[in-house]
Length: 349
Ligand code: ATP
Ligand code: MG
Ligand code: FE
Image (cartoon, rainbow, N blue to C red; front, side):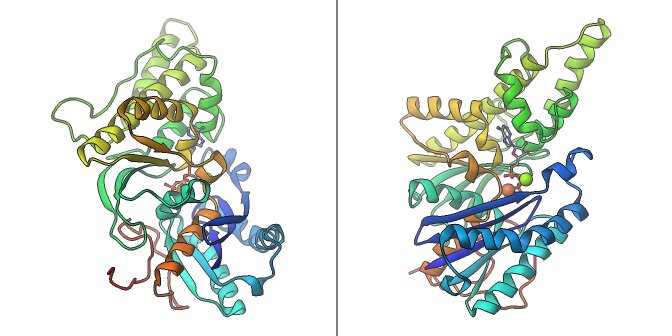
């Protein structure tokens, strides 16, 4: 099937088109610049920006795929989790398109989209697999048995900040621009990751092996900066960035590999915005290689929010024979990730 996917849960208006697992179009407009001076996403601004971007982005995606609306077999849309105003705009647009084209509509869980992003580059997921989702709002270890047919098993989540949030907040402490993740990645290139050793939260024996905690790193970074300033010195931003990246990458990959071993799974999939981080990618590669575990990480442009990943889930749902959503389906800003699809599926056979 040809599926058009729509993503609007945060500050990216993304529209992607997928045909039988193959990417045909991938267009993203971001309102990130409009939020930069506030140091974070402003929900009302994001919702209005989606409204402005929606039609042009849909048109560009159709052009890129060389299709008209009549060439679409289904529409998939993020119905949660995310900012409610932002989600509303995407869902209203998706309903309109589905109704106008006379095709079924599928409600998709945003995080299932992040997982499915990888299939657009590397083909069907080798299930079961362990998935490490590291994004601006989430940090979770999942056991995925069949993305659209089976419930997703949560092995662990963050107890406080997400990894991306940690990058964003520490970047602010270090005086780096928003969004912090990419800025830290760039600054870290010139830094020494051993110049300071930041804590590795929840890695002691007896700690939950799959739970994360990143809020302490903020405090550690702030104290490190403060200690320099008390001596009348300025800390090296490059060193701070490199050390933070090292601490986060170390904890993430250590726990992900522990999960692969414990569940005897041969593939680790790392997805979400923080999967774009160069140190996370490099350390995951090295540790997976030495453990004999296969690693899959989507290309950078599919790691951050986009509509193609939502189309990818929609495509899987159509092929699995999932029940479409009714046209009065609503958003769920805090949807827990249990099923990829937010509408019912026939029982797996
Ligand atoms: P969620 O998916 O949990 O709802 P989100 O959609 O806002 O959150 P994503 O778009 O997946 O999150 O990712 C954005 C996050 O990724 C931001 O926190 C950003 O700082 C981080 N990020 C992006 N690139 C990098 C990088 N190179 N290094 C570290 N972090 C990065
Ligand atoms: Mg974003
Ligand atoms: Fe996301």
